[in-house]
Image (cartoon, rainbow, N blue to C red; front, top):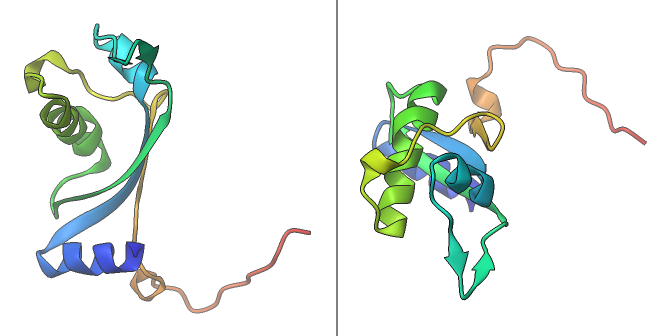
Length: 110
């Protein structure tokens, strides 16, 4: 499934990211408290994200994630701040073919 998302993103000349956000902690840092049916939303929110090719990880954390969450939550995006590395993890997804390597030593930790 992730490979399909990566290939679709690349077909429109984008970069695909694997992201996870500690939702409650992030919302508290922005001044919002997210409750669902009287319970705090404390779950880790994992998601994939396709961005325009020029977007860096800093662009994603500072601009794209706040806009994305604001849209999903029905908020004005200017009320949400950049996601800090304390609550937000981001890794670009790529394929082995993209690495320029001559040799790889792989192993399994037992």
